[in-house]
Length: 273
Image 1 (cartoon, one colour):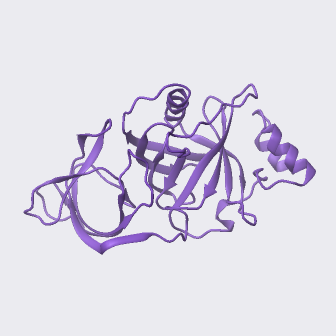
Image 2 (cartoon, one colour):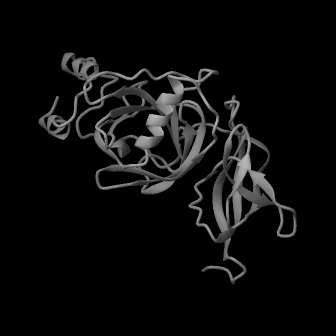
Image 3 (cartoon, one colour):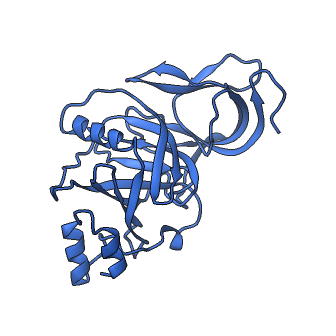
């Protein structure tokens, strides 16, 4: 264990089990000191699972899985090392989507929206605490590059002093992972200038889209990975359409990944250059 690591987490209650493993040299699950996440990965989507939640007094919060066994995951469309992008995932009871951006000290989340399915404790309580914590920036207090079969890891400290440990996982969204493209592959879609509230298992903000400029609008429930959506601006996009293997019951089975922005229009004005 290095002095740099000790200095970065001196004000927080340390992850006792992880640090104990580090001290004995058996540290595949213990984030290391000052390691850079981009040491071992290139750009691209990445998927991260919440595996440990330690409160300021040192006690651990249980992290239950969903009805179908789904863990709490964050999927960063441009990778966790990107300056900004879109994030989506499962927060313990519902699906969510929004934006993320790097700060000098860690990570921030904004423009969050999600489904509104009610869950009994402890899942509902944990999800509420997680979404509340995401309203303030996270501070990065430890990272570790991937080692053997173990994915990269990161520990974030919330504004209330909780320590959240995430591990990068394989699957849809993992960097370099294979995705199953549906028939049609690439396509052109038109996106309306405003998102709207849409019904489902709960209520959330959806995109309005269509195949051509004169077709009727339809609702798109999933994220558009890579799109930094600006309200008041409509888009003509080239996207790759792919299928999500075994999606949760409240999540779309088809996803879009942005390939290029063909055109941007502010209201009925001329294209934005």
